[in-house]
Length: 326
Image 1 (cartoon, rainbow, N blue to C red):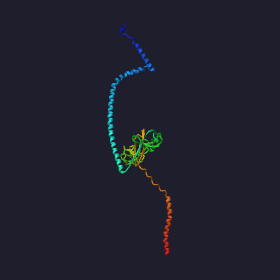
Image 2: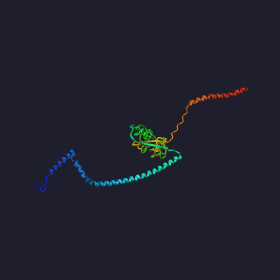
Image 3: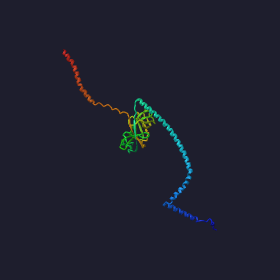
Image 4: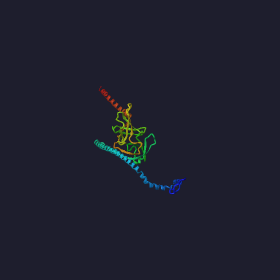
């Protein structure tokens, strides 16, 4: 006996027919949307209508993430605020010390009658590229003689000195870096006031302080600044920091290895300093004698005969007088 539902619940086509219809409709919609983009408008309308529901569903998550980020940001800002406050106090103390030392320096110079009128002009420049020669440490900057760059001018960055202008073109200039093996800079140890000359090395990443006696007070960590004695570099530019001091008994000088304080190879924006010092020029050495030794000897020989004749005449005079008496 077959069971069939009552006529009240028997509505529409069968389940199989409805499955086939919806499968075919889905395939048609997929193909038409993929080929002809027919459902773009429908998709946009549905997205706009469902956006408030999506935001409402994501609201708890956003609240939790926002609270966590607020707590982290608040803690970070407090820590940064404390660090900056401490650094501000330290810089204020250093500024006060610098002002005091500057006033004392000016007073002492006025008392001793010394002048320290130095004018330094700066020209901003950008490092364009490095030289292709692997055996030299040189870069090219985008300023030349047309912008006032002069040969021999020091080049600095925000951290310290990086090199010196060694060749000037109309629109570009060549800068030899501190780490070049042919570069030498007169420096002074800040802690002790010891003066020496720092040279580049063949490796191109370190510096060496030459002619330092073994008994000199130089230790790792000492800071080196320009001494200003050569009249080329301004006084007090940060140059390098001592990292190692090797003292050997068989040599009279210590080997002092340093590293530049500035990013010599990583600098992008630099300043070219046009330094003018009021130090008077070095006096010229006296001219050498114009007459050689041979000429002096000849003069002595020429002056000798008259002297001999006078001596002989003085010796013959007594003889003549004695003969006259006889």
